[in-house]
Every structure is written in C-alpha cells, then in structure tokens.
Figure 1 (cartoon, rainbow, N blue to C red):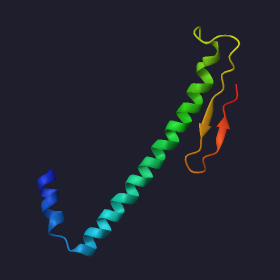
Figure 2 (figure 1 turned 90 degrees about the horizontal axis):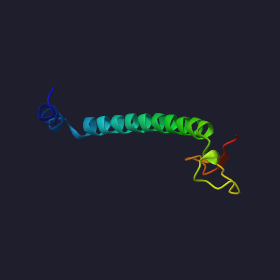
Figure 3 (figure 1 turned 180 degrees about the horizontal axis):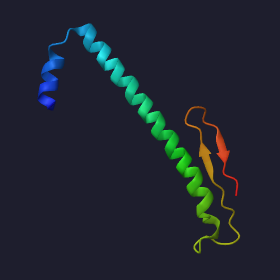
Length: 82
C-alpha cells in the first residue's frame, strides 16, 4: 500500500477513530524506543567493560578512568566495575 493511499484512507476516518489510531501509534513508538534504549544501555555496559580505556596508550598511567551508566528514568548513576 502506498503512502498516498494510506493518507486517503486516514483522511476519511472520523475523528474518534483517527484519535484511537494515533494513540496506538504513539504507544507502539514508545515501546519500540524503550526496547532500543534498553539494548543501547546493555551494549554500552558490555562495550565499556570489555574495552579497557584505562589501558589506552594515550591515557596517562596516573589518571583514574571510571565508567558510569545513567538510568534514564531515575537519573541514578551506576559505576561500571572492572
């Protein structure tokens, strides 16, 4: 189905039905974004833990390198353990 035909069908809907569709789309997008954020956080935790930035040749030995993950819901910081 083309975008044009979808727009035509949507424009013929009555307002309550249109509002229901928009609400369902909002919920779907919200759920997809939450899943993506969770996957990004899990990837970052793994990446930071495995990468070992503290041993990078450009980081001086006397500099302490720590990694933190911020919880997007609570704002809490979680230190990455090495």
